[in-house]
Length: 148
Image (cartoon, rainbow, N blue to C red; front, side):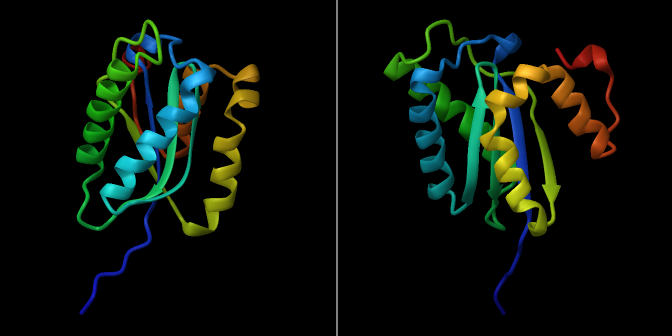
């Protein structure tokens, strides 16, 4: 029998110390690079986006892929890419942790639009406000002092 899954993930992580280093002029190059990582892991990317200090990835994970290992691979490979290409001056790495939220496939279109509109969204809300809202919506307990 075959394995069938449909688990839609929103993965969110930031730059180290929330540094505003992911300048818009090379962000698309980084997004394409991460898309390649996901393809190589047999994951389907629906959308990737972000702003100067964090990324959102909407993806379906292949059943053999653990979210923690995927995020680790993305961060390590993307850091190498950034260093080799010298595309983001001041980039000093990624935050230690990440957040991963699961959604029903019926939420896909709304998630894609949400990630597409990150620039506009962050004119109104900080990353911390957005992050806390996501954690609260998904009923994840956290201590605010550990969000930075």
